[in-house]
Length: 301
Image (tube, rainbow, N blue to C red):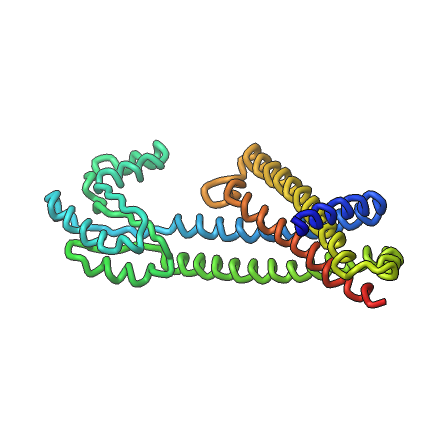
């Protein structure tokens, strides 16, 4: 019970102290909010870079052409079963007859060009299986496997493009991770120095409390709670600021038709809890720990 009473007393003292020192409180909140907001922007950029890289990978497919001599449905099913043995590395298999592929090709032609294909038999193009990969780094080994399947005449894919996309997404992930870590340390430095400045301006208040016999825990408690409250309020402001900015950007891209299957932003619902967790941990955590550590020098009277 005593711990609970002390906790609520610390909250009361913290709120009272914040009201008595409005300028420093507002200054601290603004600086912490700014740091959290910029840190959140880095998180959002990192996650969207990874999201777009993943979307690019999902567009990479392998086309497995089968012999025109194979017309028996059972033989086609046997080839499909051989492909499905790699289900752990692929996400989708689509079968198209040669006629379907030829019709699709002709549907993209102008009337002038289409006339050149009059009389051309529908069987000119091989039937095929189109396979979508889970991980494009497995493309080479999959191509070799599919080429060995009986009845397969050729396997076509943009291997060089796939490798470039894989290397690009890998680079984006590494750079993004280092940028987030770098700005996390910058934010920690700025926030901790802001707390030190706040405590320096209130050093006389701390000294007086120390001289009248207050214990270190009694003095430190309200300052730690105050740091947590400042961090919490800043985290809430930064979160709603980030959410508003993000949704505005999504709306802008949609209204101007910029978004497509690859160049699109990750739904905010996927980012929400990551941002909430990051803001609360960085804001409240640094606010409380920073206050706890920074006040030590003023307790030595």
